[in-house]
Image (cartoon, rainbow, N blue to C red; front, side, top):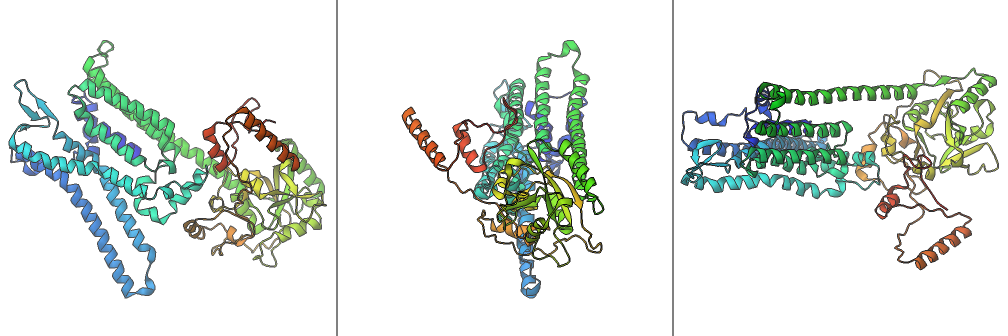
Length: 631
């Protein structure tokens, strides 16, 4: 909503900022949009009987003080609620709610910030109108919005310091916002490599940021400061532009230039956290551009030869603004339908399993052969993972978690009809220890497609050529940057190591189950399991948040993210001799470890990002998308 509010607030003020009377019906449209600039508040009507210049001063003073008084009332209301809460807590200690205090503070801060966000530009706009004076041929100067006020008079000069004080006070408000936000800079932009989803989750779950959430909630983590920049951009359009020049054409030229710069920025920076908001903000800048360009058309009469003047020009401007709004709504509607269709497909896939309890060996063979031929690439292997009926639904929604016992996810090459006691032993040992005795881990089988190169011998079963695993280190490298194919993101955001659910091609129920049992819902999650292997440290506030999430993974002995075992040193090689010696040392170390050194070339500024998040596949290249290495 911020993108729309900002755009229409700027357009509503364009008639004054350009000192142009627009033709109907665009003029009527601007009158209807006066709500955005708060022109509906007729403070000067209070003194309608007074036609002296003091009326203007009293009205301006009311504009300067009313927002401050209303903000104070909101703050006092919050203080009163806190006092009442403290009284209730003292009277009934057993019913105390520690989080209520923070909720009250957050609610009143949100309301205060929303109010200031809406009224700041219109108030500053009226304060700076005080300095916008018309100079007549006689040399006399009068305020343009009220020519009864003499800019050289004693009353004007006495009131001038008051207006300057209030104007400076209001103009510094965004800097105050920036100061308080900068105190929480590390929390606003968490260091989580390139995982924007995880960073947003950590930021949104931080209770310390709740009072300031209005200022950053709509933006990406790296753009936590954007509300302050956008406020000053809005102030320039609404309040400063009329003071740039006395000529309407000059003002319009500045408006066009700033609209073009804004359009380029919104297209490249994408500051909002949602694609739709970025698209809306980008398109809105063209609405501003057309509006300011129309001022040049009116001033120069350049469109008169083709008949675009008067009513036609006004109708054209109305059509442009409504067309942009309509196209935005249509885009939002179809985007919603597309996401809903995709989500419905994921939900269907997550709940869908095939009853294969009566399948013959021939039926299994023909089914899996068809999958091999039509559903997996030649570089992948068709493997199987057994689990219980209770947990299969969670796996299809979030992914298959890695097991602490084996340091990864065990899989087998043997299909259900050819399984042996080894499969029962492997997947029975990986089953959650909290399961009831009548729940078996081999009730349902997942058919997976995994690259053969990722399969490693399963610890303890190296002599068996049928069971393998995909290690946690490999799974972390495969961690997606987005969760488009994941229904339940919470285990990923809680740092569990999982195989993405899109790797599950089919799922089959292969054992009889008690139909009266329902799938485990994990209404009361247990304390997070501390695996024996190393994992990344979790933020304490995030851990508390994740304990409320109903994903159930905390009850099972699953692995968290495994940190990298190797350290990387960045070395600047100044000459070819140093380069040669470094390469000889690397080749020797690789030879002793029975490894082959590979090289990946990139720009120096990309190196820190690679060290944080690993090498990312390109979408295109001479050999199609992938990571390019050289020997």
